[in-house]
Length: 377
Image (cartoon, rainbow, N blue to C red; front, side):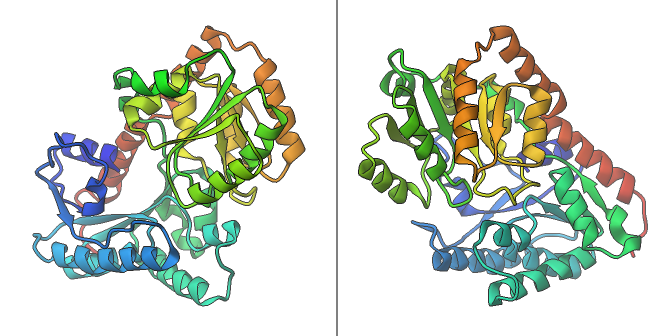
């Protein structure tokens, strides 16, 4: 969304951004707030339990509305989801401003929660989120989604005459990621030595299903597995690593973009998992980042993300539930002598065909084509 905002400002649109102050948690001391961004207060989670996540979402809902009351009238209100509760704020703001609502869907809720097994259809959570989602789909003038699978799923939820208001604006690789200076300390501390290295860089959360990586590590004791990040599953993973006596697996903590880029450039391969094959319409950002750095990938997924990997041709995949298939794919990955030319070609393809900057241009063009000069409904 930062890339999209940059493009809108560059094209001369008047933009104001409402963002939670929790967005500032990981910023360094030299961070300078952009003049068109307003940060509202929100409950800060020290851990991502369901109750604390709900408190965070409810505080964002209330305080984003308050912040919007200080703004002038706008033509469009753009909201990205999840979190889905923030959509209620966008609905209220768009109604007050008599503005068009643009709904940017990163995960289709509550469908993604069903697919992950977080809760079931018919539950209180399921019914609540379905009502919010239906209201948002009906009110939105434009709905954008990040993968072809999500576009198809959203169109199925709309009446026949409204399906064309769903458009594909994919997620992708942020070209600024490659502009990071080479990391130093983390490479020396964590990646010294000649052992083959498989890395995971990202959130250690429930949606990743990282216990599958531990099963692979058991079968390949001569390979070093480094997990960079923090999240809800960190404690569980630490217990399992100790309980299985996996000396070749290390939790390395959270790293910034500079070190993440250096890690992916140095590693022999990267592990990119989804927790379930049912998440067929998801393409993790970490897949774009690994491929954009020319790092071969073992992908535990099915669907749209596999299509991207097959297009680029720098890695192998198997279903998340298929332990034997993942082990065979990993063995094949290690045995393949990836050339620098193959890596550079893959990275160039990601940069040219799957950049966030290109997607941001498409988003701005779509807004201009759909809404510029049109009378309000």
